[in-house]
Length: 462
Image (cartoon, rainbow, N blue to C red; front, side, top):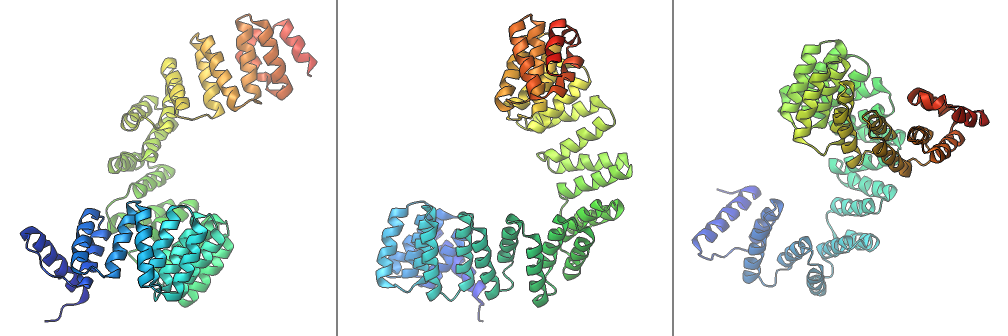
C-alpha cells in the first residue's frame, strides 16, 4: 500500500513520538526530520522542535535544511548573533539557497533594518521557486515601514503568481484602505473578478469598498454575489445585514444575521445587531432579549452592556440602567465607557456623590473630554466641594487652555468664595475667549452674574 505525503508525515511523527516514549533511538532520514520539526513549529511546540533538530543533526550533521530550521528557532528566540553566525557558515556552503537570504532578512527585520531586509529578499527571488512567498515577505517589510504603496505593489505580484492567494488579496485591500483609495480598490477588484468571477472573497471586499463610499445598493449587490459564490460565507451575510440596516430594511437585516447563527456558533456581533434591529422596529422585548444573549455569549463585549444600558436610559428606566452598568463594571472596572454611563445615570437619579465618583473614575482612566471635566465640577460645587471643583477645572485648563466654559465656571466659583481678584481674572479671560458663553455664568451663577462689579466687566466686552 502506498501512503500519500500527508500520511507519510503522520506516520513519521507517530513513529518519532513512539521512539521518544520508548527511549529507543531509531534512524530517520533528513526529510522525515524536516517534516517532524515543521509539525512542531506550526503547532507552537518550540521545545519539541529543538529536541527534534538536535536529534536530526546528530544523525545528519551536514544537513543544510536542518541547520536552517535551527536558525529559524534561534531567530524566534531572539538569539540573533548565533543565528547570524550559523547563516554565514551555511552561505559558504550553499550561496544560492534562497532560505539563507530569507532567514538573514528575518534577522535584519527584527533589528528594524527593513531596507536591507528587502534587498536580501529581492536577491532571494533570483534563487527561489516560490516567488509568491518571497513577494509576500517583501510586502510585509514595506508594511513595517508604513510604505503602503510599495507594499501594495509587492502583494499584487503575489497575486499575479497565485491568484488564489487570498492573504495577499486582503493585504492589497488593506493598503488601498489605508491610502483611502476606495475607487482604485474597486477598479482593481473588478479587474480581478474579470479573471475570477466566482471569488467570494473579492465580491466581499468590493462590497466593503462600496459600503465605505455609502453606495449601499452596489454594496448589497456585491454581497449577494459573494453569497451566490459561497452560500456558507458568514462574512457576506454579516456585511449584507449591515447594509440592510443602513437602508432601514431591518427585517431583512435580521434574516441575514439569523442565517449566520444557523451556519455557525452564535456570535455576539450578530446577536447585538439583531437586538438593534428589533429596537428600531419597536420590538422592545425581542431587543432586550437579544442584548441579554449578547452579553451572555461574550461578557467582555462592552457594546452589549452599553446597548442594554442605553436601551433603559432611553426608556428613562434609570434603576434598571444602573443595575446593568454595575454588572458591567464588576466584569471590567477599567472600561471608561461604563463609568461615564454610571456617572450620567446616577446624576439623573440625583445620587450626586456616586455621579461624581463616576466622572472622577472616567478622568482617572484617561477620558479627558471637556464634558467630563465640566460635569464633575458642577456636581462638586452642588455638593459643597468648591475647592475640589476649582482644582478639577484647573486640571481641565491643562487640556483645554482656551475653553471659555471652564474659565466662566472658575470665575463664578472664585466670586462665590469672595476671591474677587481671581474671579475678575478668569471672567476677563473667559470674555476674551468667547463673549457668548457668558450665558454659563448667568445660568449656573445667577447671583454672581447679577453683581454690579460683574455686570460692569461684562459690559466692557459687549
